[in-house]
Picture 1 (cartoon, protein in one colour):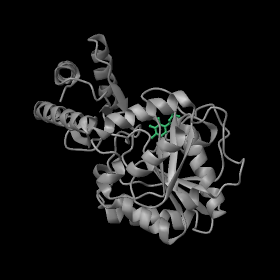
Picture 2 (tube, rainbow, N blue to C red):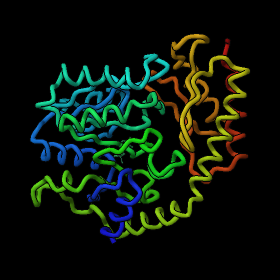
Picture 3 (cartoon, rainbow, N blue to C red):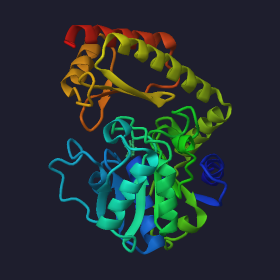
Picture 4 (tube, rainbow, N blue to C red):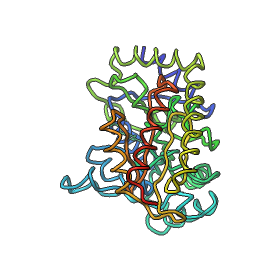
Length: 343
Ligand SMILES: *Cc1c(COP(=O)(O)O)cnc(C)c1O
């Protein structure tokens, strides 16, 4: 039942406040509806997204993405009243969470102003942006500023949420309690479903008939999501995520000792990435990332590159991946580094 699933999401999303959930069919649709709800609630028009963000491929969400290529190229014009502001990207900005938040807030105040700002949307750990983990304290500082200024804070947990990082939600790493939390991707294990779960008084802002859709909350997807939550509630997937994190980070750290181009191994659970950098610098080596991915594909290992500079290799495996499979992937990456890396 959709209402029972909403209760379960209310229980597991951060914060003990009264919550409601609206079910739709895809992540992008969840983002779109969160923006509509925030606008109705605040009576304001602008939504702010962060540098290196990814929020989807629909008309509104492609305007919210950091990268125009490949998501927006040739698909304009783009939706107005979307602004992007700097995020926290510790190796590149060298700022603490508080400093990075102060910089973001300065941009928000100067470029948009609180009178017009409906919402800030942030991925607590960025996905397509290269698994960028913000500095400690950054997300809650933004939430605090948002609350003080009547701005809705939306956490896009579509990639990082629901067990992937070894916690229910990545927001937990930062003690972040967002106003709205978006879920999709893993929620129904491949069937189309997404949710907007948020403070009841915000969720109730839209007028009757204003939000909806033909297929949202369809019974088959809802049943699949109940099965996913049943599994998560056993705790077993969290243990798997922790195992994957250990195997991957240990393996990558030993590779990094041989190959100095591996920098900044980061992430949690089954969401781990590393950057390829010119040794001793933060200069991205995008070409090497594609060479490694191409070599790995020939050896039967499919790697995903990521990041605004194209130099990140990310691991986003199923929680069922075995340590042996991870070892094979790492071995193939080692081979490719030995073949292509001159440093
Ligand atoms: C995948 C993704 C989306 C879009 O979800 P779709 O279901 O593909 O529309 C939005 N935000 C984040 C962070 C994502 O990873």
